[in-house]
Amino acid sequence: MLVALRRLNRTGHVGLAILLAMVLMGLVIPMISPYSAISSAGEQFEPPGPRHLFGTDSLGRDVFVRTFAAAQLDLALALAGVTIPLLIGTIIGAMLGSTKAPLVSLLWQVVIDAINAFPFIVLLIGVLGIVGTGLQGLLIALLLTGWARYARVARTRALTLRDVEFVQATEVLGYSRARVLLGHFLPNIYSETLAYGLSDFVLVIITVAGLSYLGLGVRPPTPEWGAMMADGRLFLQRAWWITVFPGLALSVTAIGVALVAESVTSRAKGEE
Amino acid sequence: MKMGVGSAAGTSSSAAPWEKLRGVLGSGAVLRLGRAFLVSFGVMLVSFLLLRLAPGDPAAILLGDQATPENLAQLREALGLNGTFPEQLARYLGNVIRGDLGISLASHQPVIALIGRALPVTLWLVFLTAAMALLAAVPLGLVAALHHRTWFGHTFRVAASLLLAMPVFFSGLLLILFFAMRLRMAPVAGYVAGFPVALRYLWLPALTLCTVLVPLLARVLQSSIIDTTEQEFVETAVVRGLPRRVMMWRYLIRPSIAPTISLLAYIIGQLVGSAIVVEAIFGLPGMGTLLIEAVQIRDYPVIQGGVAVLGLFVVVVGYVSDMSSAWLDPRTKAK
Image (cartoon, rainbow over all chains, first blue to last red; front, side, top):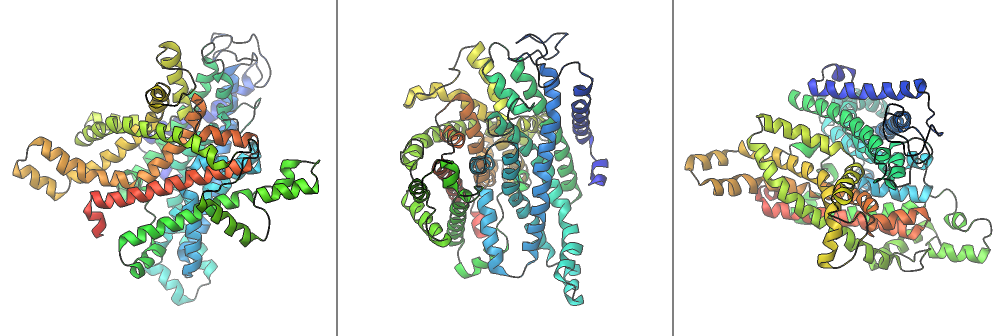
C-alpha cells in the first residue's frame, strides 16, 4: 500500500495534499485558537470577519474552530468504519472463496448479497434504530453492514486464486487450512480489498456525516460536520455560514479521498 | 464485454455457487429468477434479524421499568417474539409475503398502510430524478466519450468525481439557499400530493439528486461508449458510410446502454439511499422521513418494515434490469 502511495500520479498527489492539510489543520487549529470548540466565543450569528473567520453560530460559538475540531472526529470515525469491516470482510471472503463446502458457501453468499442489496444508508438507519443512535450505535452499525462489501470483493478474488498453481501446490504439500489461508490467500487478496476500501472511504465519510445530519449519529454539542450543518439548517437564510463552512470542509475532505482513490485504481488498471 | 467504471462497486457477483447452479437449472432466465428469489429471502432474513440486534428483550426496552407481565406478553406478541427462533422466522416470512408488516407502536396503524402512503412520494422523486438525469447524462456521456482524449474528457472525469464526492445534503442546502431562498423559485420545504402540484415541491429535490445521478450515469455511459467504439462493428459502420444519426443511435448508444442498465440495481440503490437523505432536507413525507421518525421514537415494526420494503424494491429493480439488459443486448444472453 505504501508503495502504491509513493507511485501516485498528479491527481493522487493533490488529493493526498488536501487530506494531509485537513488532518494537520484539524490537529493544530483547535490548539492555537483562542476560542473553545464547545462553548460560546462571542455574539450570536456574527458574520464571517477578522475576529471570527467563519462567523459564529446560534450559540455564539466560533464556526472556524468547530469546523476544524470536527475534522478529527469525522476522519477517525470514517477510518474505523472502513478498516475494521475491511479486516473482517477480507478474512470472511477469503475463507468463503477457499472453502470446499458448497452449501456453507451458498448460505453465506445469500447473506452477503442480501446485505449488499440494501442501500447502504437504509440498512445503517435500520441498525441504528434497533441498537440505539449515537456514536456507539454508529460504530456498531458500520461494523455490521460494512464487512459484506469487502467479503464480496475478497471472495471473488479468492475464487480466481483457487486454480492458480502455487495454491494447488499447497494441497499437494499437505499444508494446514490455516497456513494456506494466512500465507497464500490473504497476501494475494488484501491489496484488492485495500484499494476498494480507499474508494469506500468516500462513501463512509459522507454517510457518517449524513447520519449525524439526520440526528442519528454524533450528537451536539460535539463538533461534527453533519451535526453542525443540521444545526445551521434552521438559520440558513439568516446565517448561511453555520451550514456552508462545515459542508465545504466535508466536501473538500471527501474530494481529497476520492482523488487519491481514483489515482490508485487508475494506476492499478493501467498495470493490468 | 468489459464493464469499465462500476467494476469496483459493480453488481456482477455471479461467481461460483450461482455458476454451479447454472448447469442444473439450464437457462439463464431461470437462474436469474432463482437468484432474485434467494436474495429476496436474504433481504427478509436480514430485516428479521434486525430486531434481534436489540440489547436485551426489545419489549422490555420499549416498556421500561413500569412494564406489567401482561403488557410485556402483549408487546412480545405484537413484535413477533413468541415461540422458538425457527417458528418466529417462519411466521415473519409468511407475514411479509402476505403483506403483513405488523402494527406501528406509535400510531397503531398497519405498517403496510404507512408505507403505502410514504412509498409513492419516494417513487415519484426517484422517477422524476431518473428522467431528468437521463436527459442530461446521455448527451454528456456521449460527448465525453467521443472526446475522451481532449481537455473536455479530462475535465468531465474530474468534475464528475468532484460532484460524486459532494454529499447530497450539502448540495441540497446550497440549492435551497439559491433557488428557494434567493430566487424564490421553489418552496423551501413541504409537499402537496397530486400530479401537477407535486412537481412544484419535487423539482428541487430531484435536481439535488441529479448532482449525484448525472455524474454517475454519464461516467458509466462514457466508459461503455468508449468500449463500444473499439468494437469491429462500429468500424464496419464507419466504412459503410452510414448516416451520422443512424451510426450514433444504433451502433454507439444502443449497444452501450446495456452495461448501464445492468448497473441499474447499484444505481437505484445509490439513488434510493440519497433520496432518503434528500427527503429529510426538503421535508418530503416519503420513506426516508417515515424511517427517521420511526428511529427517533423506536417504532420497531415501522423500522423493520421500511428497511425490508426498500431492500426488496432494490432487488426487484435489479432483477428487472438484469432481464431487460439481456433483451436490449443479446450478447449478454448468449454468454
